[in-house]
Image 1 (spheres, rainbow, N blue to C red):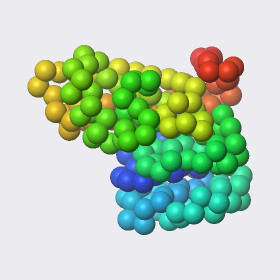
Image 2: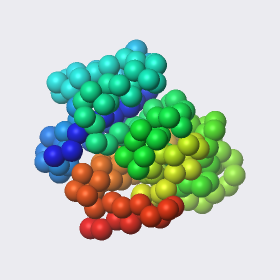
Image 3: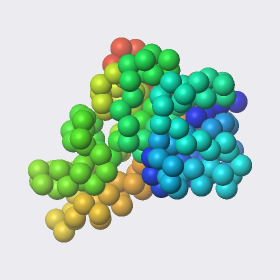
Length: 197
């Protein structure tokens, strides 16, 4: 059973989806620690409710130290609104995944987070959007793609309604990617990620 560390900055609904799948046995993994760069992040409260170590920590070196102390095999960024340094990436190369609320390589990178992503999708007139789980590398939202799923953009959508539907997709594909990683079914060859199911 692999050890998982989850980094959050907000409500932690993606974290909750992973907790649920760990507790029901779908994911053969154990969340050892949840770390947030924001003291009032509800994600920390979610962790405490499930007796998971919850830590508020802004200093990246200390975050790395905590993850190492907990012998974390996989780091999951579940709404972690902080750019990861190359040092952090190298410590967990191909062992750190992120969820992004668009179909990378569209509407991603520096400055694209939260509702800004959905506003950009609607403003551009895109007909589909979705979510992407990818491994983290030195560039924002540019690591190898693990899994994507789509939602239609409706004519009457605003950023909030689109975000809600994209979030439902996130809650499905992020736990799925964690499950597959824990089962050793994900391999990386250059930019290509192979998933065996």
